[in-house]
Each structure stands twice: as structure tokens, then as C-alpha cells.
Length: 262
Image 1 (cartoon, rainbow, N blue to C red):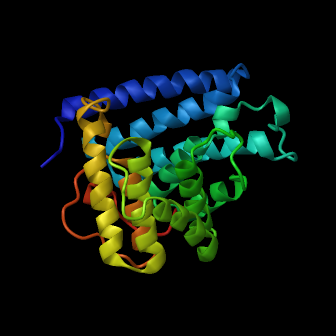
Image 2 (image 1 turned 45 degrees about the vertical axis):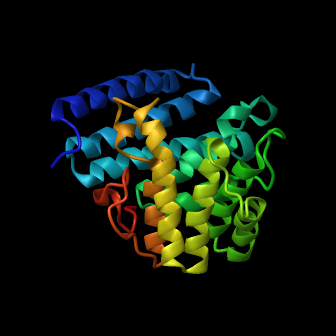
């Protein structure tokens, strides 16, 4: 049974396609700003979620997520690749390569089950945040993901462990701290090869996400799909973990570990 009415999903698809077209026209005309790449990627994520809920072929869903990840990758290339014709250097927009932008890009690649694309993007994430006000929880989570994707488990464990140690015996109850604490638990389960911990982290993230689904994400595709859960679910499967039970906001149809298309 579909999670939403077909006409609702169709409406979300049409809105996303319209917004993507507007941003693509600016990119083609050479009038786009650095953040246009990020904005286009956000709408491509919306398109992917809506296509899934509409029942479109999985390859179309994955292509939307893959396009979103590639847009974020381009944004990081513009900021950091001196050999690229798109290089902006100091003219780069900091928020276009923020920690949360990086996480969104990695989520998009993992939701597409395109692990090589996730690895490419991970390589562009700098050792330290470009914004000194970035929270410790955010900083450690994105680099835990980065190092796991780049086959550096010791470094990944150090970052994940820093968050878990900080809240040992007293887990945060709400807000961004709770969000990243639950994600760190799931990531720790992947790193430790511990299905129980992995699934507990997913369950805790779903519990946290419920407030968003019923609040700011209500009446959108995000009411039914949590990007973090799908991304970590696919990453866990890739590393031999099992996703157990029926986890809210984690549609089974988005889980898969097959090789990415060329």
C-alpha cells in the first residue's frame, strides 16, 4: 500500500521539477550563484523522495538522488579544486560547503546506493570545519562518515567515540545534540559490526525524527522518509549489517546495496 495518495506525490514531483528547471536555467545562462548548486540539489532530493512515493521506477528515484549528490560535489569542487575551471577560492560561499551541506550530499549518494560517488564527495570534506562555530556533534558526525567511507575506521571511531563519550550515561533528550547522538549510535554499530547497536541507533533516530515528520516536514514527502535513516541503512547493509524490524520513516524499498551505474 502506498504511503501517500498518488495525486499528492504527483504534485510534489511537479513542484520539484519546476524548481530544478528554474535553477538549471540560471546555471546554463551563467548567472547562477555558488549556492544555486546547493538549492538545485535540495530540490533534486525532493524529486527523489516524491518519485519513490509515487511508485516510479527505482532507477529514476536513484538518479534524482545521484544528481543531488553530484550537485553538492560540484559545490565543493568550486570551493576547493584549484585545477577546476569552476574554482572560486575565497569567493566561494561558506554555506555552500558547510558541514550540513556535506552531510546532505553524502546522504544523497548513499540513498542512491552510489558508494563511489559518496567516496568522491567525502574526499572533499576538509579536516576541520570552515565555520569555527560548527557544533562538535556535527563536526564529529560528518567526519565519522567521511573516514568510514574512505576506509579509515580508526579515524572514524575516534570521531564517533568523541560524541558518545561526551554523553556517556546522560544522553541528550532533544535538539541537534539528540539528533547527532542517535546518528552516532548507528554509525558506531556499523563500525563495531554490532547489529543490535546499529538498529538501536536507527530506532532512536526514527523516534527523534517523528517530531520533525509531524512538524515542519508535515504534508511533504519528508513526512514519510528520513534521509539519515535511508543513508545509514544502505551504508550498514554495505558493511554487512542487517536492518531489523519495521523502522518508521525508513521505507524498505529504498534499501539496496547493488553497484552504482557508470
